[in-house]
Image (cartoon, rainbow, N blue to C red; front, side, top):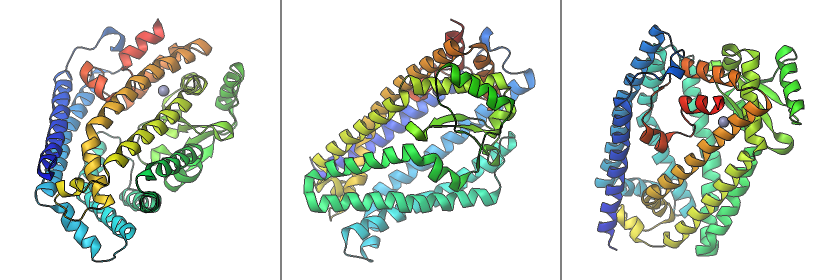
Length: 410
Ligand SMILES: [Zn+2]
């Protein structure tokens, strides 16, 4: 295959991906005003419903703007040999392939982050602000950016440097070593994310002794689940939106509740949400997701190893001198349809798991408080209650609120 053909395949992938996305968004938007099913009539009152309609429309329009900007930017970069320009820039500073790759990705990442910052700024301080969600200060917003950069420089840079080093030493077998490294990193992050990374951004405090904690402990006992690590995180530092999640396994397993969740829900509803999270653990969804992501990474790295030495990858992006990092960019663009498909499959599993976790909560605790909690959470995030089925199929990791309520009442 010639570099020119490959170039146009990449362009086609980007355009088709963009078009499919926009068609799905438009389909979804056409159903924003659908009549609410009877089960969902009591989620919003009239004023809140109107507000949620405005929120959806605003986000939809803003989404068209940002995704168009990013596609135009990517295409511009491809048509005007942007990758070659940045590659040459990086080569001015070093002859070492690892250093060149690090500088190259540093420029690309920070450059694209700076270009998209006005959009995320507008989204946070204009849109989210207008609808009453935003609690982020400008200081927090920019500190988050800096910390994010620092983290990707250290973690991302470290992993990239090691992978290129493996490639230099072992040639096409590098993927096995890279796979081992990424697997170690993934498992480590799964175990210690809450302990090491979250504190950089948020405060976590153990849930204080009292009625709620007692109720949670009493429930955990009935299902034989050791749940001594319950933390409250200051989600309210950034947004009024609420959440709860499970992380880690073995002795590191813990449940994290947003302070906003504790504010919005009553004790019974919080226990029901926790029962759902315990369900994910008991039904082995956490392990399944971890194993699946490790296997998918292995597959991706293996396929990468088949192509990475071919200079046509770099040439397709207009770069004469083939290198691992340019090959990686081209591969990433060509692989997008495959990762789109694996993402879809993971969503199918994820939605199935949500039903199982809901069933677990219903069978070991109660269904009704989970229903009322889901209604409150949907109301408080002004979420769309009438998504288009195709949109749900492609994008939703959870079943719709209606589907979950119907399942919980079965
Ligand atoms: Zn869940």
